[in-house]
Length: 97
Image (cartoon, rainbow, N blue to C red; front, side, top):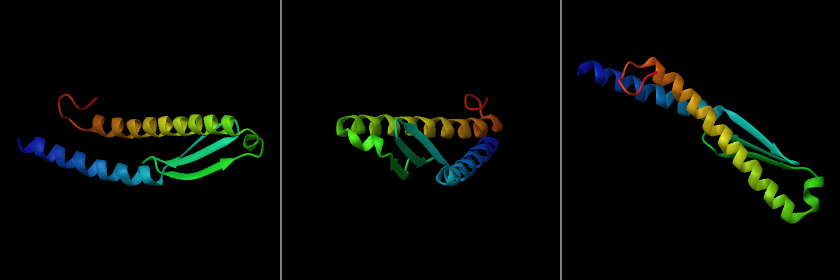
C-alpha cells in the first residue's frame, strides 16, 4: 500500500512538472493565411493574419476556426505524449505502459 502511495506522489510531482513544460511549449498551426500559436495549456499566444486572408470576411472566419482547431488538436497530442511518457515510468497496474 505504501508503494502505491509513493507511486501516486511521484505521479503528482510529474504532472506538475508537465504542466510547467506545457506552459512553455508553443504550438503553431496555419490554415490559408491564418497562423495561430498557442501554448500546451491551450492559451492563445499569437494570431497572425496575412493580407490575402483579410480580403474575404466569411472565408477568414472559417480559416480562423480551422486554424484554432488544428492548434488545439496539436496541443492535445503534445500533452498526451508527455503524459504517456510519465505513465510508462510508473508501475501502477492499469496506468503504466
